[in-house]
Amino acid sequence: MMTEREALDVSVVVVTYNREESLCTTLRCLISQQPAPREILVVDQSQQHETTTERFLDQLIDSGQINYLQQAEPNAQRARNTAIREASGSVLLFVDDDISAGPDLVGKHWQNYVADTELAAVCGFYTEPGESPIDFFPSESQDPVAGWIYFPHCYTRRTSCHSLATCNGSIRREVAIRIGGFDENYTYTHLDDTDFSARLKQLGAKAIHDPEAHLVHLKEMRGGKRPGRVNEYVIADSNRWYTWCYFFWMNFRWQGRSEILRRLRRCVFRRVNVVRPWYLLLALGHFIAGATRAMKVIRGGRKLGFPLASNREPEAVATGWPGQIRNERAKL
Image (cartoon, rainbow, N blue to C red; front, side, top):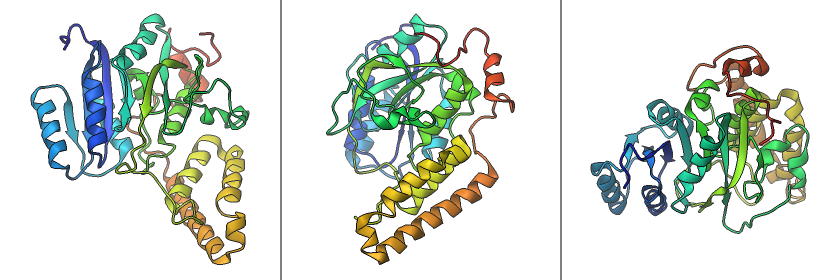
């Protein structure tokens, strides 16, 4: 391994919850990085691991290959905020706990910051099971209001992008703190990083999608904490509706209503539900429960890990980081 002096000034952050072999696979990839990162921060929300996983983690901890933190309550956003607070690197690289990557992942991210001192964030490339790289933008990503949130992370060309996925995304630590870190009102891992990205975009910071900084997201079904479905007919539970309603109101206000209406058509007023009115009522019940919960949380405001730098408009905030912030349309 490289010495601390030779290591790149990057803190790799892995937030994990009830993952076993996929977590071990992820950490093997990270400790094999050349050049190596300054540190690998693991924030573990699991109550207990299998014996083989425990033994592997103990070996990495004892050898100093990872900095290991535990969090009792499973909240990925709180865990990421803890990692931001504890990190010593100037750049934070977030990866999921179920990925596979080559030995140059950290180096590819870091090269972008060396080449461009005005760059605030790098949105990495990744594919998931059954997914292939593409060189075009899907129609949904071309919507003038919310299209940017559907940016395809398997896009093969380098371009401006603000959709930073915590599966494979890096950001300067000072910028992550400036936009408040992650919103802990997202109790499930869905749209949480998109919300983080929305504040990055509002800041006017320069960010790019780099297809050379690539990995594979294994999409492990066991573990994690994603909202789900009730059955084959009720395909969005109240947790998913809560997340959708909260996200689109907090980031788009009334402009986000079309996204909610579209999801109502696709998830509630489906043909299979209309002919089964008992499932239609159940689906509507989950929507009402999720939307009601979202309204209560919205009234309380965001629960960020760090105070925002300013209560002024985003354009005004952008002027507070001399020499680093540029409009999102700045040329690469």
